[in-house]
Amino acid sequence: MIKVLLVEDNDVDAELTKDLLSEWSMEEFQVTRARTLGEGFGFLGRERFDAVLLDLSLPDAFGLPTVRQFHAMSPTVPLVVLSGVSDQSLALQAVQQGAQDYLVKGQGHPELLARAIRYSIERKRAEEHLTYLAQYDQLTGLVNRSLFRDRLIQAMARSKRLHQPIALMLLDLDRFKTVNDTFGHDMGDELLKAVSERLKTCVRETDTVARMGGDEFTIILEGASSQQNILTVATRIAESIGTPFEIKGQQISVGISIGITIYPHDDHPIDELMKHADMAMYRAKQQGGNTFHLHEASETPSANLLP
Image 1 (tube, one colour):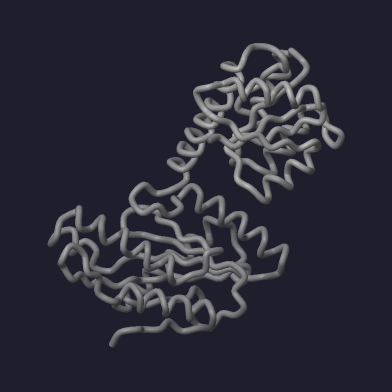
Image 2 (cartoon, one colour):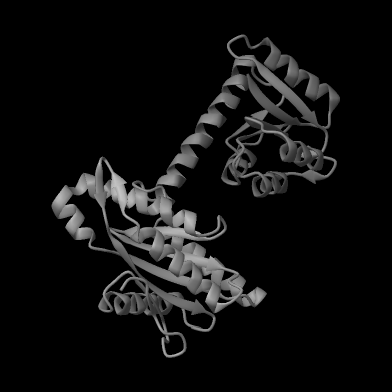
């Protein structure tokens, strides 16, 4: 069963589309109709649809802006434009704006419409998979370096606009090389995955945990209410990672060194912020590891969590 949302204000065109899909015997389509773009958004907010068929001439939207509005509101839903205008330039622009296909009403037969819907679903899946590969670490599933940088830029902008500080943490595992040398790289990979899961449990879902490469991670904490709350999170992380891991029957112990800087108290561009967090992380390493260190440590001393 493929659930389709048909956004079409013309009763005759809507019935024709439903009839075409009902004639297709290879797959069954369940069609829900909306008469305006606003009504369509209402359905999308309440139900899950596999694809949307969208007319470009609606009471509350007209032309290519209709595609842009839809894509902005529902970027993950496959979209096929059904238009009364046979215009190759318009069709190309609709696809460039986010539609998966463009069909002219009344042209073709059931196979053409059904195939367009099915192909639009598969294209969207392929698009999402490529986006995932470009933005997420393949081993751990965490945000990768590229997406992390984008999120940090956005978080810095929100911080200035909302007058709420953010904490940038740079984290590096202690004794990870020993794990690789002793147990092998496969065990090291399993440890990195386990560390990633623990890191996620130490922060909120709205925070960002990223893997920068190797055994280096970063965290963005947004909307921190106080410096002490940030250091409490750092303490939680160090205690969690410092607890031995049970992996494939082996008990593995590592620590973690955490460098922290707080924006906009540390009011510098992104590369300088990263450098400050990196310097703080190496200060933590120099203190023996399993430690967090705050940039401008004269105001808030670092804390050793193990004797």
